[in-house]
Image 1 (cartoon, each protein chain N blue to C red):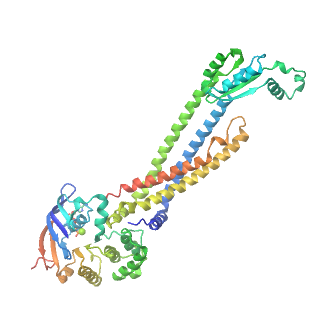
Image 2 (cartoon, rainbow over the protein chains, first blue to last red):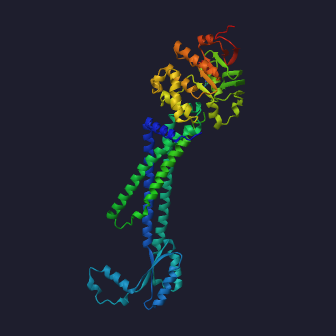
Image 3 (cartoon, protein in one colour):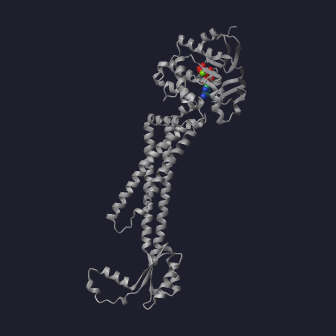
Length: 294
Length: 228
Ligand SMILES: Nc1ncnc2c1ncn2[C@@H]1O[C@H](COP(=O)(O)OP(=O)(O)OP(=O)(O)O)[C@@H](O)[C@H]1O
Ligand SMILES: [Mg+2]
């Protein structure tokens, strides 16, 4: 049999117009669910982003002995850069260290007058891919010959932060999954109610010789359109809200590392719309199926 | 063409609608199915459409045992049977013309063919003027005629009409019966379940009478009542 897309589209459009109230219910339900889901995604993305931002600031600082020759320093740097746990090594020379102090004390330049750069120690700031590995890295540095007083790392802070981060991220993921399940149930229920109201029609269609697919297709297209519409509205609101939040946080909370890069806007849009469309299609498919047994 | 072999249909636990029915209808025959209300006529129609399964016995249509037809092939079986339902079964969200067109759309016919055929059929049942009305804007008799038009628009080899003249005035009834007669003459097997005594008596066709779910009479050129 020919697949008559034009016919199916006309049928779906007409059904939505005739059952406008049901369509509005399904679209609204989808929009609300996707909105909640989207907010959940955003919150977890930003919390993860902030926690990672904080974690990133935690680094191990290893000071070189004052008399260390340049060649030895270079060798140590290259060695440390080779550690698998290490993300980045920034060398801070004596001069740079002095400049930093000068910057910090720029209000009172007289303090710095006549200061000899020799009093500063050269160091390297080691950023870790995963803050949890700081103990292991410190151990290696000790083996390299760095004494305890030449190593500076907030070990306690790191491991605690790491644990909290893990809990928070898992809690957020679990909440997102729960939202998703609730959305599936709510949206497919809205669709089921609208199809239940038309079960007699489905029966008649079957009795005059329509195949399951022929009856089902307009309903599925209807579910698709409703899911698409509701999810698109919600996804746009979510993305717009995210932009507003990032801008607001940048001004109001300058010390919290909220970054627009924590959220992949395009990905969020695609995921949210895909969720709405999929639930619309699957929900209508399953709901119609129950009435096709005629 | 249609064979009932010792068919029994029990609704629920103990409501016996058909009781050991044997019936053979040959291709091209015109058969009246008569009997009091509740005698089982509509049940036979629903069994032929495979809307229901018999409790015992077997039914064959066109040589095919209905119990052997898988779910996905049921639509093809139904498209070979045009059916006028006792309660019309029109789609409420479609106009008269769209209801008739739907029976052609399910078989995948071209739009152009549908646009030509539907008005012809509606004219034939005297509804040319009402084509764009919805079922709830039509009288009972008009809805019945839409149902008749839908049943034979696809020119199926079998036409079943469950009480096709129940809501019609005598003149329109005669028109519908003449139409059924003409459809039968071009080779269609026609089965008409009816209470319309006058019609049955005038047409002198084969009459099968049901009583309490049993076939109590089967006459080649019968009347409605129990006469010779
Ligand atoms: N869905 C059902 N559930 C239970 N009993 C039913 C059902 N449908 C029909 N019956 C019973 O089966 C018997 C036959 O019903 P059927 O509809 O076949 O009668 P009929 O001959 O078509 O009557 P009418 O002339 O009034 O249309 C009746 O006694 C009826 O009460
Ligand atoms: Mg009946």
